[in-house]
Length: 416
Image 1 (cartoon, one colour):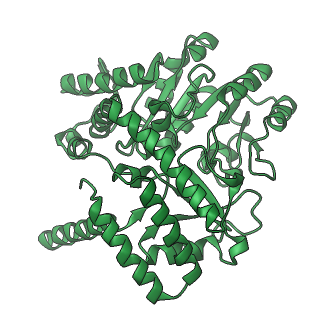
Image 2 (tube, helix red, strand yellow):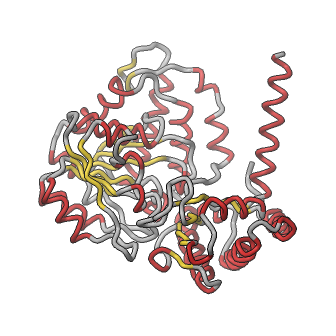
């Protein structure tokens, strides 16, 4: 029985590897970690419990584990120029939860970008999430043109005077003005939490402004554009320490013992490797190419007649409003998957359609850029998207595109 279960799992893993090799991953939150990252994540480090922090563990046998975690911390501090880093959150949502747990009492006010406008569930989405259920949530939106309206955000902040303002997005194709958010937070005495999960790699590469001079606290996942394992970090900046010298300690206590038990040290080791990989010139070129690819893909999609939210992109992703095409986002995503192009259905700003059947799709270039694809490939992809969405349910045409996609993918293999 055990042998059969083992065989089935490895068979399924092989099938998933084949799927990844043969398809174009355009979901902007997904990427490919290096062989070195995957090796340490699957190492003997997964055996070890390490409740506590380096030098202050509740279990014995952590002398080497301490060095690994300190290495990850120091690499992050150096790379982002911050004063304190916690690398223990298991993912982005627990990282944001830890910040709220450290700084808020139940019922106090947080202000974040609405999910419908491109924010995240943990930025205060009402009723169904902890961030909207246990705290008073005020949500800001983008304007009718899809762009952030900083004057309206400031008015909202002055009206509700939140204790925490969250700036960060999951589906916003433009540069975030962290300086302006910093001014708004300062004007109402709020903490500024910057969630850079999507753009962390772009910030490291220098192709997106950094929030470090303006935010008190920064959270991020460690996969997406950073190309590390599924984990997260919480960073405290100099500005955060100036506002509260005990902030770092409060954050650490919120993570453990507040919300988590033992950290996943195999993941933390993977984060350390990814941070080392992000320090070189190659990573900077990678970030630059993500932007180049995204801009070309967006321009080609517009040339194909598609309507893009805000008309284009400044970062790694874009949103296509499919209402003019007479096709829903879910239907479009399913059709493109048959063609070997993987995107996700996504709401557009002020979407009249329900969340499970939104009016748009979200796509981005981090993963295809990791494969080594450049501008010529983006033009091919845009053409296939046009052809695939025009075909919709014509499986013969979708299969034909799929074969072309496979041939392209063979030229740019993933390091699996």
